[in-house]
Length: 579
Image (cartoon, rainbow, N blue to C red):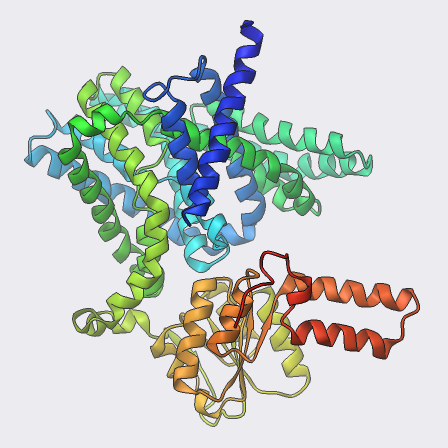
């Protein structure tokens, strides 16, 4: 076969097997990225050896990481980053430092490493977590915008920033006396890059994007966005920093202009395609032979790493004032070893900081923790609830589970409880207030609480699905509860606990996925609203009026659709669900 066709064949092979692996994972009710990892193992050098040019595939996979972080930057925005700056900077610094110190001391005391330098290096490798895998898992679960999702991503972004410093410091580990100089040079690079990014993002990017958008040429707009993303990512790589850092900063630049949503919509298909390559490329690094030969040791290391990192992260999250549930979900969300620990480990091997056996063990352990991450995230909400109910933990963590701040009139009654003060919750509160109804908001975001405090709206700071929080809401005298939470699991748990306290209370819930409409209704919700369907109904109403239909007829048509819980307009495969 001609050499110029080999990359096309490899590319097609990886995408084809990934599609099959993702489909099988989906049918088994598992995250699709597990299918991508398995497909990489299958076609890689330790499987069927179907790829002729793995380095090229891994180069394309790096594009997937860049697109993932670029999209995250567009969605995250500078405002969101400021909200979590303390936990991102101080929390991640604590986590990296404690993990590195703990691993170094443990590995030296048990004789796993030969010297303190090797111990520190292994600790640094294990301290990093996976932005790509966590982001993909959160996106699949619809939890990117939840509080725990935002905290995870803030910490992970700070870790990506730290990766650049670690890579710059590695050569100095061989000569400890030069660490101060290496650190100074690395920090200077970061400052220079951030200064460039701020100036470029303020004075050049907005005008550039607006000018391209004014041409109304979709292809030109897409090419410009791709060039911006990859160009800044390459710049950070040339500076010895991480590609992810550059791509994320590029996304932040775009997030501050009017065309951010348009840019995100254009990049998402490319992000998903190349991200698939990235996850498959991780699977290619997994050597089943090494795993089998060191099975007991690797299982022990995986257990030690995932439980150890969770135990380190948990008190850090609690220290910053977040609830126990948020702390548990976050700690089990970032307790894996990151994919870029592979890069760090390989550099350490080349510099002679670790022997080849340690390198192979790190690869195997890292790969397994990545595979287990989606499973951990799936069970963490239930685990958090079970822990808070256990007598031993219940008393100890009571302060963390309960509300942190209260602003509730003593005589409040006949009020409407609104769970969640995001974009939807804010509109609901405004409408209720203009009609003269008293409201009580439950929110776990400090930024939202500050807005509520300034607007003098009664609030409780805490997790809405916490029994201790619900006890403070006076549900027995409330008229209704509106659930506008971004987390489907919290929505279901809140509904269940609310009706256990006040069985006759009217509960209106927001559905995140079509299948939740029937689930929430069967659980006792008086009304379940699906935002996309409601937008479609409103557009249809305007269209029918334009076409000359009588408003009374339109009202009856839309009312029938809502009464039937959108069944007549749902996708055919979902409309057959029964009560």
